[in-house]
Amino acid sequence: MIEAPGSNNPLLAPDKESAAFKGWLRRLVTDTAELVAFDAGEIDAVMDRNSVSALLLPEAQTALHDSSRIVFSALDALPGEICVLDAMGVVVMTNKAWRISGAAYARAGLDVRAGENFFDACLDAPASERAHANAVAVGLRKIQSGMRQSLSFRYVCPSARGRSVFTLTMTATSAQSPANALLSREWHSEPQQKVRRIAMAAQAGAENRLLAALPAKDYAQLASGLEPVTITHGEVLCEPGEPMREVYFPGDCLVSLLTLVEGDRALEVGLVGREGMIGASLALGVARSSVRALVQGTGTAMKMNARRFLREFRRSQALQRVLLQFTDTLMVQISQTAACNRFHLVEARLARSLLMTAERMGSAEFHLTHEFLAVMLGVRRVGVTVAATALQRRGFIRYRRGNITIVDQQGLETACCPCYRHRQVTNVETR
Image (cartoon, rainbow, N blue to C red; front, side, top):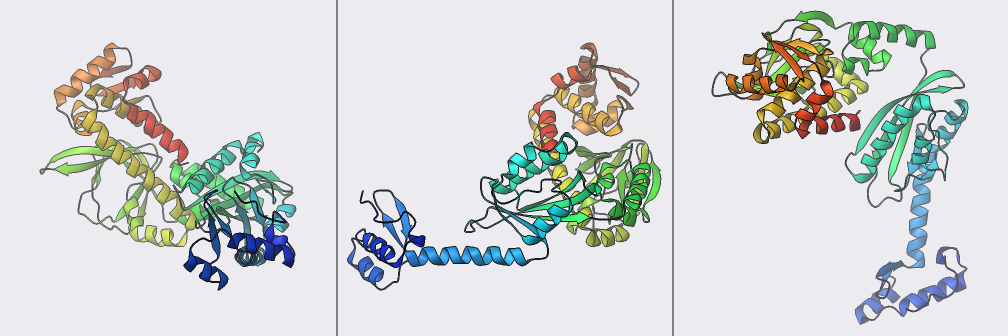
């Protein structure tokens, strides 16, 4: 290999060394047409066949450096708080707004600076922030790997101003960019007493985790349109093809999503409890239901008019974020259930369904008839009887006249198919 003359950094070399470097590059050009183009200044780089790498001409290096400097100068002037990371999570730059705000909050909550590693900051977060920091680190890995284009997180941390809250949004950049990810931060500066008052009201009125995940001000706006209702076992909330006039946020109730086959025959494809809502497809622009929503477990829910819901959805970015995350999780559950119904044994599928029901009902005791379980699993009633008897014989459940009690949860988990563990891992990663 031919050694390059002079400075190792031609961009910083004086004119004489830059000319020598360009002359050395010229010796790598062997084709006559390429040599003519090189001398005419029509190409920006030369391929070194020994190292199999492209070498930029000094002019091209200068242009690349200048373009990056212009981009970073523009980011520095923006009023929003911006942090730029490379592929390893190292901070390339933070803009002026980020630095000023960080100083005002005494560098609370992952307030990194240029040269620091963002993943290290997540690992070093205090115990009170560990759950938030871990979720942020997982999210950033998804952004960097191309799994997600953008993600947002609500982060709570102690600061010089007391308990502080901000939203951290991560966005992937193009492959041609010198940066790998852009972070933006927005602090929420409502008076502390107001935040606590609304949060307490939200906690008292929202057993539903989706509603509880909303910032206090967004929940307060939504709450005026919510109506508490009791829905009972066997009640149908919507049918396939019918307009969805209301949406429901379950509390301690449970709703099965059934797809109809050949008239009245049905198969359960999804299960929704306090973690989600019925009618989420409205957020995707779908006004008619594609499934039958059948109440499996009696309990309470919050109901809202569909038109009011759509109005609030368009207004609130926080509501959009949590609903789209839930919709993604529900789609994963539906696809996993389809595969499970095709490949796994009835006993293992029954164990999975019972565990999922207990999670959403918040109780190890609930009522499910053989008839309903047969619909859930898409099998004959006798198949449910055989499977339930086997689980009871092994001491995992107690079953009598439709009343089910999970006696040994760990044992029941060993009896269920891998789909249950896969769903648990997926839920943790998407929180």
